[in-house]
Amino acid sequence: MNRTVASIARKALTTVRNSASLAPNSKLFVAGLSWSVDEKSLKDAFSSFGEVSEVRIMYDKDSGRSRGFGFVSFSKENEATCAKDAMDGKALLGRPLRVSFALEKVRGAPVVVPRLQN
Image (cartoon, rainbow, N blue to C red):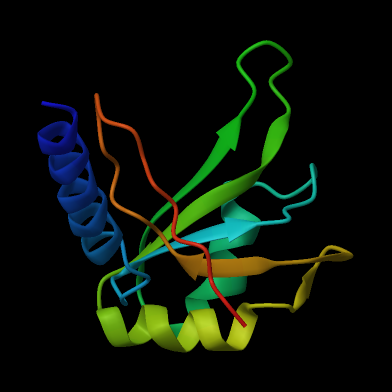
């Protein structure tokens, strides 16, 4: 019984790791945001790379202050790729940004974040 469960868990973990790869998509995860960054300034920073279809900054529900990260969605995948390559590590309002492709939101299941090896 335990071997069967372990085998199923191993297969599920492999499937999740493969599907949650950092493959390009049109939605970017942007971390390292200053508290003073709003959605307009974030959109302005990324709009030179293409048509930004949505910008969302995540806020703390108690304090109302930015949690320091957000999402920028582009209409085309290649625009998102260009923006990621250009903006990752660049400063916005004095803080360096960390930009990566957003992982798909999974409800009701644990999210396994792949570790990048050097």
